[in-house]
Length: 258
Ligand code: NAD
Image (cartoon, rainbow, N blue to C red; front, top):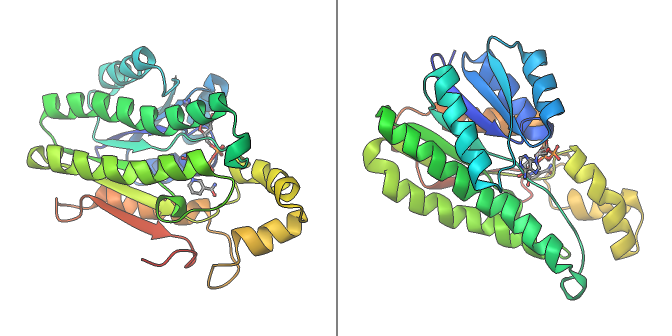
């Protein structure tokens, strides 16, 4: 029970990695807000995890008022907020000279505006409650390296590392730790959608995208799993002191080695 008496807000927890983090956090004793712009999915996940431990709150992380309302509701219903996992994300792939400006802006908004708005709201409550806390951003191996076709994603994921370092410095004296988890490729809807898109753009088969683009650089040709990412997030969320802050932890079967 590494998160006993803790309250966590996990954005994008209606699917994939966020859902598994919510599941593990509940198992470790936390009460968890499933914060997702898809209300139906957020409620479904909360029901699946048990409504006494999990609640679904519909929130678009790019909308300032909705994010403020989500955290106000969290504190009103659960009394506190100790952990933020800023995980909501989207993907869009195209060569940069063909990249649609609207899609570029949307991707940066979900990853970066979302991280900023949720961090600001969480910190205000954490500081007011005076219990410290832990903030974790869902980065990627693309926080460390580039891939073709992913200009806004790589830009946003690198940006999260900068944000984490600033917030770690600003909030450390008040007991708030800030870290980034950087997964390799994980089979979630976000990745499944980009396999045919990458195959089309690169003129190769879907099998080749998996073998030669997604897993070629791993030590064993394996996908990272949602469980691997959730365990790493739990480790950072439950770490007991400011000794571990401002860091990024790569969990990728060696796709990227620091
Ligand atoms: P996913 O598509 O399974 O889940 C993403 C969730 O985010 C969905 O439930 C979606 O409804 C929610 N979401 C999207 N936009 C939102 C918004 N504006 N407001 C609130 N919620 C929103 O994807 P996933 O693979 O689980 O990705 C989760 C995070 O992990 C993302 O930040 C992604 O970049 C990161 N990541 C994924 C992989 C991978 O290989 N799957 C690798 C590294 C990092």
